[in-house]
Length: 411
Image 1 (cartoon, rainbow, N blue to C red):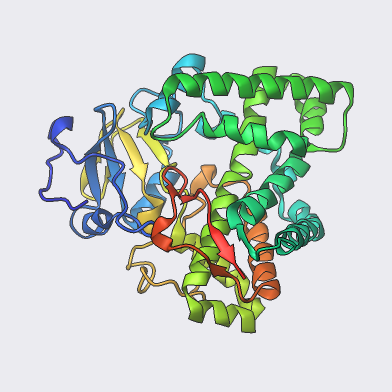
Image 2: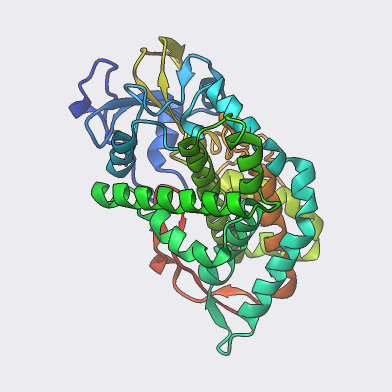
């Protein structure tokens, strides 16, 4: 989408460009973001429900807005830019933020502290051998296939982070496939709102029953610890614990699944970059940061609402107006990254905002980085002949969290 005119700040919502905007290339943000960065870095748009929101597109401005205490992440606040009908329906059904991510300090801080230890650098390091074992086992299973081809998402990208987060939280892995279907039905631009509400209720019921089983037979997993350390002392109520567990399950696998699949695809499509990594696996840590920057798969989740008037990028965002800090645009800002539309695994991309910025940045980023590094290194080491076995134009992509639904590979 190209902006053919510059809307005024006072323009009615009907006159504004529609958002979200379609990608011309599934691996890059819409071209309109670049035009905005150059011409109007803070610009008004129209959402699906007719509401107005502001897009923030430049790197420095995105970081500023995500760290500003005058900006709220409370999804129940009037004016918060809910981007699709299914999420709005779930919100109306329960009247509370579905996950602690959509809270502000101090509530957000209190909830986050409950499981910081489970995703600390030290704890994640302890999981490295176990994650490597999971990756090796799944690669063995894929290579054992008779026809030397497989759906990479089903064989590798989805089960790796799913098994890991199920292990951390204490979910029976046998239940994960059913849970995945319920989780998928609660979100997405085209999802039926009534189906979303029913699925969210089913998820709540499942987690409630799981908590009851853990109370009767506690273990060493995170859910058991949260029950003993937080639920029973009264630090959190049962509905709140259910929402915390659901959030950890969803974010603990969906985003990493997409990054493993798209990260692998990028290396298959960039021969020179792939060959560098095969020759020098020590580059993988740097490559992971560059892939995170380049793909910016979590590109529509940094929505906020102003609780005071804010001056930024030459515009005034008034109290009660929605804001979308576009991390995918920020990560392609030439003022921060030279030749930003080029994938360069030797680039120092550590300043990227793929995991967000400020108090709400991703709690599980250390775990995600480790899963990516182990998986991509293992794939390149063990299957150097891996290739995409279908036309890239035939791949079907997901919209809200960018990723592929399936991806046929061969070796």
